[in-house]
Image (cartoon, rainbow, N blue to C red; front, side, top):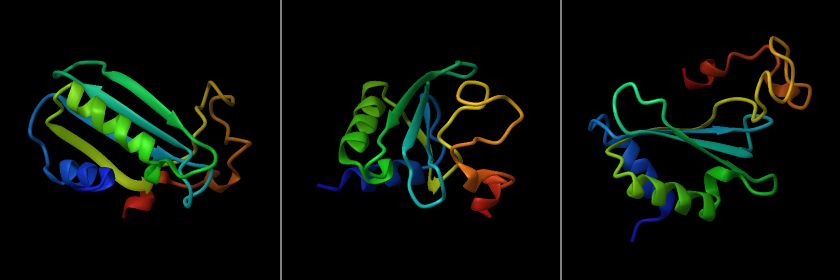
Length: 122
């Protein structure tokens, strides 16, 4: 049987298969270790979606078997047909306007200050 991460990658490589759809993004204090994963599940067009957040300070959540198993279980539960996922870290795990003031850089994650998080995907 394929590993959890292999199953997630295979699902993501399947491309757009219609709804329900899901997004899976990883966040961390730098570009080396993800401490947060966010799974969004969208059942139909225009759906606001259901968000699931996973945290782990000790182990990179991209390789945490418990996180991977739970994500796969939620995908199966909602019969998700399309998964958009990137293995790279997408930015700071803290939320602007919640964990620090809007318009400012996160004081806990200096690595991300003045960085374009989208440039990591070029």
